[in-house]
Length: 85
Figure 1: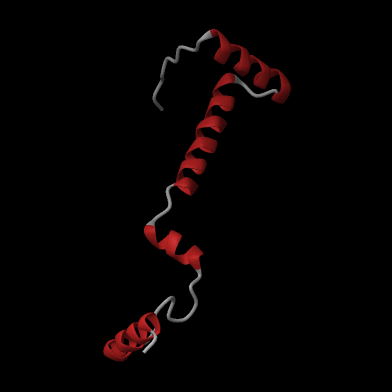
Figure 2: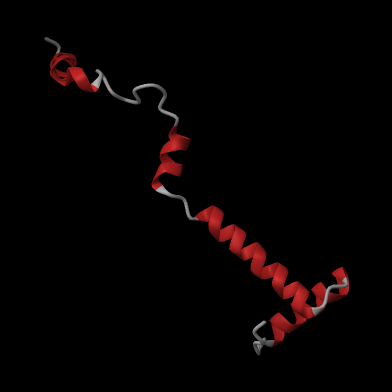
């Protein structure tokens, strides 16, 4: 186990004292909990591109106007819709 020395400013020291008083935790236990909480928060915040895509829920085919096997037909239909022909 590594031993670290941490310097806290007056405000952080006051907050740590409040946490120790209200929870009964030692300073080490309170700091460990804080580190775990921050680690969990960061892992949830770091969204991968797939996570973002999954939340969009575009449904089957998404915004595609035609299946990928029929791209020419889809392009023709999109042009007709846009130009009204």
